[in-house]
Amino acid sequence: MPESKGRKKDVYTPPPTGKGERKVARLGSPSWLAPTMVALFVIGLTYIVIFYIAGSQIPIMRDLSPLINVAIGFAFIAGGFILSTRWR
Image (cartoon, rainbow, N blue to C red; front, side, top):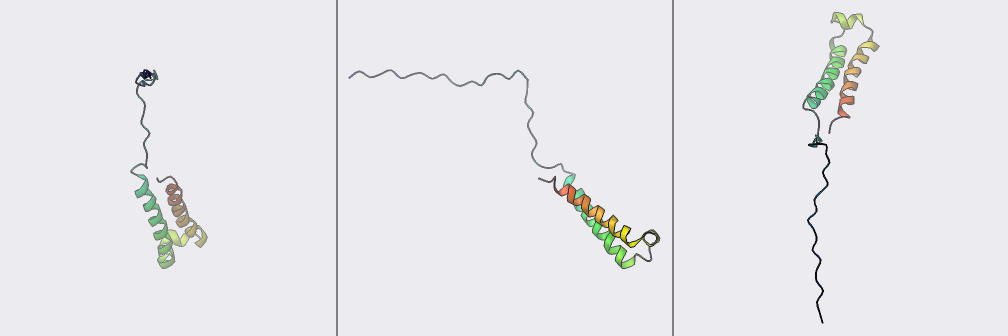
């Protein structure tokens, strides 16, 4: 019985894009993100702790109401939380 001839397949060459070099996507976070995030958490927590321990002795904290002082501390913590959502 005769054997059939096998087909020769050409080597696949992708079509040229015409756009030049492609940019490679950077995965991961910027190098400043994690230290800034942790610093905001620590600053916010430290501000609230200092307010409760020695708030009546510090002139700036004494002049502000307690609600504003706590809001300032939580604002720093919220900033750290917002940055943490962008961390990969």
